Image (tube, rainbow, N blue to C red; front, side):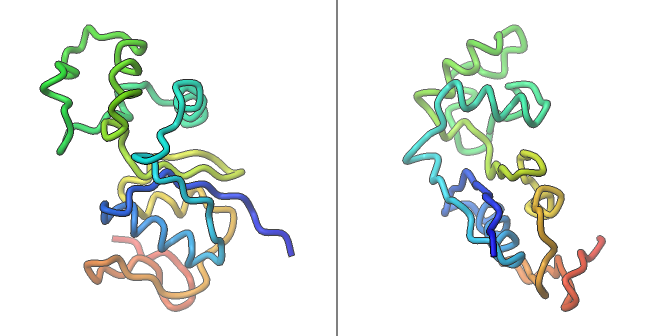
Length: 144
């Protein structure tokens, strides 16, 4: 049996990232886990991820618990290159989790967004760390 390649740019200290990882595993896939704070994506990789997501650099910036404001990144006149210049040495500025599969690439916030990226269906029930039911016992997503 062939296993699909799925990559998660993960922060184990982030509940959203842990929930996304749990949903990936609940589909029977053991992903390649990249702890992006320890092994940040290169500038070229960031550009590729952004292009596959079809989003602007600014949409990937994380504001909360980062040096976003101190670095003046809230300035709307900053170019994509200037934003990438800031993200390279400070990977905490990259929002997470980013999940890559053969289907697509997405910033999975909220964590249930990973369901749109995965090539396989869920195998059974899944609850977020806070107990919220996301997938029922038949592997079907539970709509809010």
